[in-house]
Length: 293
Image (cartoon, rainbow, N blue to C red; front, top):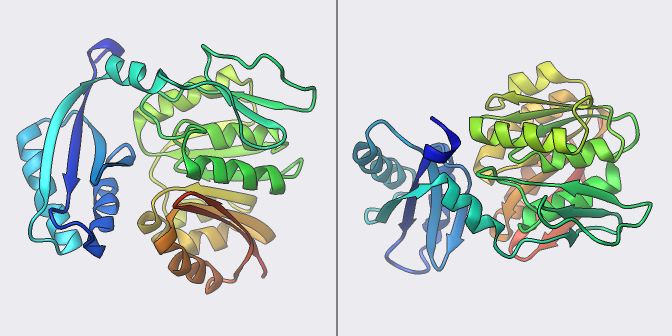
């Protein structure tokens, strides 16, 4: 399928009763179904899926999976098709250079920054369908924490690398090796293009795979790991995080909502990781931890 003939299934779901605490589980459920990220829009959880062989069957099965995962007996579902080129035009609107830290500036290829300073790290990014732009609080949080912790010579793993923005940032900050792990093939395509555009191909390797604790341990030992994914997906990876890190190594966890933060922090601390810094960006939380053993 060519780029111009690709289309995506947009699935929109919501709980008909506003304020039900279980509705936040819809996002986790969509991710487990294979969504290319989830966005909340006016009470709806909106996600995109690679075109299934049986679209109506997929929508029906998704409703059943979400009902079982959340315990909600009534979930509203809508779906429509999104052409790939329409998606590209949608995310281009309104995007321009964004200074995220004192020295990290993220910009799209069609709007390069005019006044970069010699110390600045400019990251050119064209995400396409991949998650990961400086317009999202979790990405900004990870970039700020990376800027504070990456040391020259670090070996790093980026779990759920999406557009590759965090892998690129780690490499530009001095990491000599970054393993970018991403299960979505279109995100991998976007990441590879962005890595080439930012001239860090010698440091960053993209692998199309869904990370597991075992695969993380096999890639270790490393100085640092960044994982900007849903809180529910982070949970089963904690043993892998700990097992892949050197003593004193760092871990950045993100993709965590405010109401999920305490549980996520306690889970990391129970695994021998100490919280060093917390980044708060709107409703999103990103935490920097150190491996103390």
